[in-house]
Image (cartoon, rainbow, N blue to C red):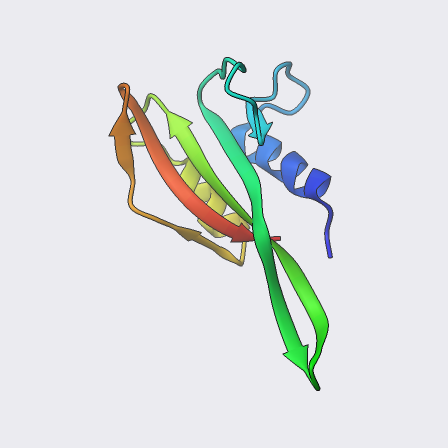
Length: 107
């Protein structure tokens, strides 16, 4: 099982913010954090558990997140779909003049 920090670093690579401060990737940020955009915000949502013989033999962390951008034709979701095997995107929406692309990823 890969670590959350590995996923975090992959998100930084997707945004192209490697070596930049701030990275614009936020894990479970408190409401007081002012985000810069384009950004990826994500949180631990649970675990996908595979069972056999009444025992858990394999599990993968599930993260729920959202890509937030000012660009209506953002390519970040497409980049993420090409990069990650176990990712699904939900219905995009607009809030406060920002485009939101929600996703669930197992990593």
